[in-house]
Length: 449
Ligand SMILES: [Zn+2]
Image (cartoon, rainbow, N blue to C red; front, side, top):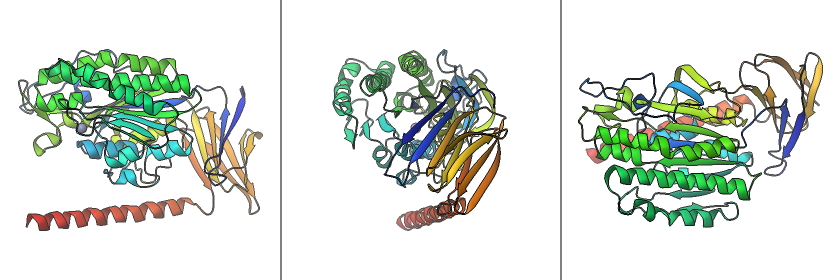
């Protein structure tokens, strides 16, 4: 390799020596420090992506929202949820597992939050929906809507070990909600409910950057007003709410852009309407759940290490979690994930798990670029479409792997935690999930009988 500009070694010791991680950055890359996962409940990409023309159940064509801010960055054109149901879809987003539900989110090593935590991140959330008990328990601190009522909002804070000052800050924002909603009704009120959440999230990100500049964080945001508006008001109001979001989201985009934060815009599911003058929409009942307008979701990524543009092909909601981890240069060790990384990053990363007594080295054209011993090693910043050799040397000899980098790669030189073991754990868990689901169905049938 010709241009090795510099090598940064950073060493994170987490959970003692058992999970020691070495991050080796080769070449000058622009990796995001933190991330914002912005989930808009009920936000169908059919209504604002330039490629789509939404239609109603009666076949009539629907007009689209006029938007400017949702389609820049790296945009995934065709990505869908298989389960247009709020709790399930949020669980799929954070686990990368196509059959996830709220219970799966609580399993160890199941979510993006487990991985970020293991790598020294703080998990912060402001969520109006999608905030199931297990989702809340994954956060270090969360401000959430207990009842999701715009008329009588109840917004508690749940906190474990939040960085200093964050609890007081969240409390301050919790108290600001009534002022946002005061004297408003209809579309304006739903829109204000969204705006409060966006402003609170933006202020939280800025506060973290100011008071804890070296602390990496994953900020999860969910706004509920577009989904609620779609359910309770007409199609024109739903479009009006999307257009308001288009301007309200801008300060949060700006914060991400100016502070080296990766921004992921997505939705749990879309929304369908029976006719252009329908006064109620839906997404999960039989009538609506198979409509493309309910299934298509946006995925727009704004990050210094992704190339702007449109990515074609068919993708699924479960691809979001591994893609988010890849952009952050974190390993896809999500225990149940069956989603795939969408190749949006402009370099590749090699993730290695190894016995800590092994010397792991990375070679290119016969030249050793780096050598470390650790239980986890992350070699980031490698040019795409290049070839490397990875060696692990220990008392049992030397293991060697040739790597062609068309995307991120994972290797395991750890005998006690082999890939086979991980597969077995996954298999056992899937069997357990099936047993729980089948038992649930039997109980439901008995209750019905
Ligand atoms: Zn939803």
